Image 1 (cartoon, one colour):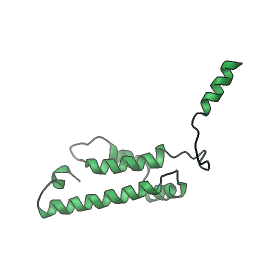
Image 2 (image 1 turned 90 degrees about the horizontal axis):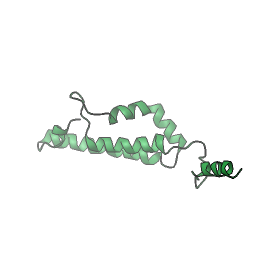
Image 3 (image 1 turned 90 degrees about the vertical axis):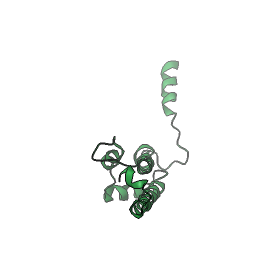
Image 4 (image 1 turned 180 degrees about the vertical axis):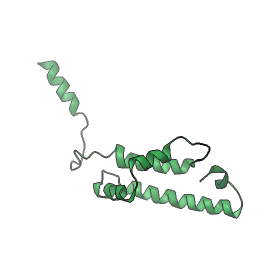
Length: 112
């Protein structure tokens, strides 16, 4: 998907634009399904082929042979964030995740 086809005014360019919008909407749907560390959805998407290496390949710097549109990259950024960055499988059953547990250990070491 190159930028030059996306911005053309002819019928071929608008068809590619609609296709790009459709694919981005599907990727955004997958991202929304994975919100809140929903492990079943994350596992299903990994089985389909949306692995960490696939997402990093799409987000990698553009080359002469491969130019990925910014909207497509933005959708994949959101997918990578919900699948791998915000996925905290250790404490997925707690409603409010307290990420300040390290400070309690540091305080105990200082007090003793």
